[in-house]
Length: 376
Ligand SMILES: Cc1ncc(COP(=O)(O)O)c(C=O)c1O
Image 1 (tube, helix red, strand yellow):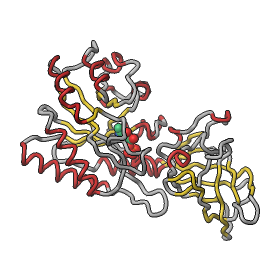
Image 2 (cartoon, rainbow, N blue to C red; image 1 turned 90 degrees about the vertical axis):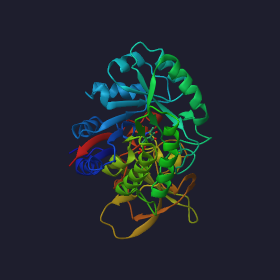
Image 3 (cartoon, rainbow, N blue to C red; image 1 turned 60 degrees about the vertical axis):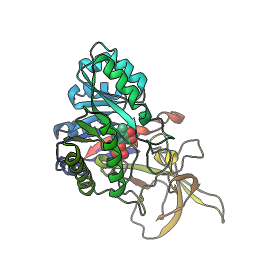
Image 4 (cartoon, helix red, strand yellow; image 1 turned 180 degrees about the vertical axis):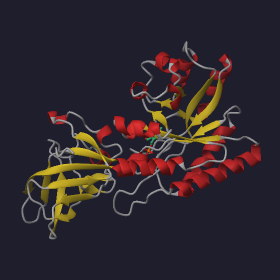
């Protein structure tokens, strides 16, 4: 196994465990689990998901193209992108499911040569929730999806060419509380109600995991029970059987990843200041903390029992390159109690399987990328 640092290690066993968890979930009228590949597009992870029969959610035409290159059949890929696809005709020819996330995208699809007779639309249902404004993807302050008041415009466009909207896509952020997920589902079904031909509802991802402190981890079985109750109740009222789709990214891969780095230097700012562990990675490999003030467990990998307070910082020439900040606030540094460390010690940043290697500030200061390896 490689001992090179910095390196991302992805545990096959943890991945397998999460895949099994999702493979065993059910919904009353059918369930499709799509892996949100943006969380971690590492080829071996994609292959594991595919071997287990999972489908995929792609967030750009480039991601969809990459999945096709990895041998994923188009019919297993749903494209829901903020950007107008650069190769729409090719993706449609390959059978990729298209989700229009704006009226402009809907018009592009309607006029595409290879389009089918059905389409999916992503709706912003006027509610969103998440860690902060950077992770919420619904509500008035979010530019994701077609604002719910424009549903008549969607129907006007599709009716004019005889296309059926058969699938609704909604993704409003992230959280763990089942009662909030009940609200999300109730709201989503109100949207479904406005589309008489919809048979499938993709309720997105956002099932939160515990990484640090008092963060709550979502209980997927509990959330699926809540979803199922609402779908059955909707069926009882309308006799419409709605198939469910979910798009977990984080939950499938976050706990499988560790970022192993080396302490490159130790500096301090005097008696009333801080002691900083400078490590040989940072925002060029791992941006989440700088971007949204996310917190991860950090462990110094030596056998010391003595503990010290440290601020862990990255090696980039950027004062925001900090790995220990206040929860949700990258502006405020928060020292951590860690094992007494020396230059050359290894350090591990836990639960870095999702939105870490895939979302790094790649190339900054011309640092080479942390390598990625699978471990058992
Ligand atoms: C449309 C969509 N689906 C799925 C996901 C996956 O979310 P998560 O990784 O939190 O499960 C996201 C994340 O932003 C998303 O925007």
